[in-house]
Image 1: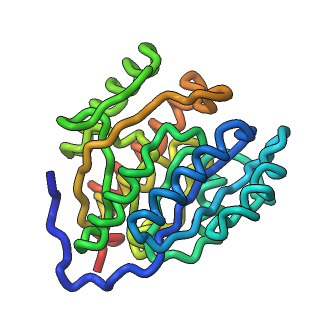
Image 2 (image 1 turned 120 degrees about the horizontal axis):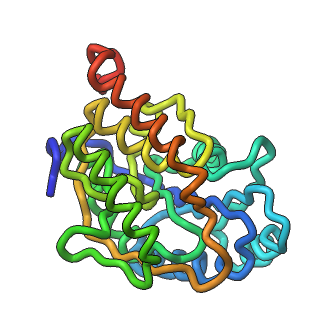
Length: 256
């Protein structure tokens, strides 16, 4: 389901940076990181795994230090500024070195095999690859019913006001060429609404993108960090912010 078209003359990619925000994820991180490293190694994907400890109160940092002794591509860092899901991702983006990035969750809800497929599509010349759990070939496992209802409602709203076929904009699991991230700066969303800010800005600013069916699995350990009651107005703010750019900026921020 391509939008625009890939650039056949796009520069070859050299390093894939995985950005993983983590807060109190000591139980989830070992399997997540080990599976990622294994899948990337099997598919010869040059990579670094940047895990951002976002103010954890458990043994997350200690677990990361132990994992680093076994996985040379792991680069754990601590967010030394204000905390928040979006702030942690932005901190990771500022400290990664890859010319392509993928944002993934610490709880292994995202499939490492899909991340490899993202990398392959970016190398075909796409600027962005957006995963969708709600297209043919995609799916969810053990998705809480209330969150699923709110998710579909929010994504329908975004599709209507932006007139785009992407039906899973709120999903964090997406990949970008580094030039897209730089072209979307400054990133202003401090919380989960960053997952909406980056793809919408990329679309509005004219970067090429394609949709890939993905599979999502609910976490096995710990508690979900997304609190629906706290995020509604924040998502609405970001949508309004980018919508105003789309219709009133006269293309000032378009990709050149």
